[in-house]
Length: 190
Image 1: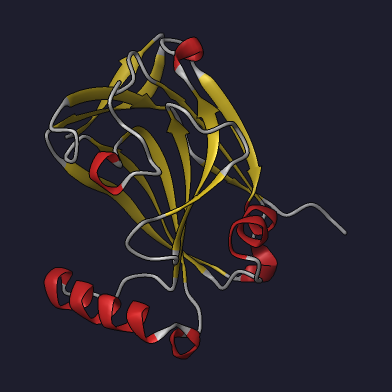
Image 2 (image 1 turned 180 degrees about the vertical axis):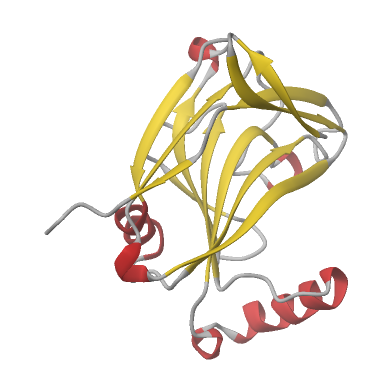
């Protein structure tokens, strides 16, 4: 559940997951040469203690910022193409060629890249780690293309959507988080 509220005098999105997962998504179209920085903030009152983004059965996180990218699907391994066909049949639209997530993980150090267990086309960059910064606003400014290259080892395609994701389905728990404004910033001149 995603609800706009005012917290600390600022408009934010309150996200609640109760043994569930969902996305609050906005479709965009930003060409690779137009990718700049992404500024965002979030606040997590409490982590999911048993969650671990590197273990499929406990792959929950109180906050994720999810970036979806277009690309050449013919380059994907057969395993991923079959999985993508299955996903498209279930959700009614093709999944992105690549998904980059900014995450808060319980254990992995900041800067780590975690590859999803189900497909290598989802990569997570840890921008916050552990419980020491809970209940305070965390602010981030990320270079999208640079982070994509770090995570995937290739150039990004067009950015096709940006989403908030709060989930607690694998651990069967409840979590609440707050998201501040997400801003796409112009690329810096070269």
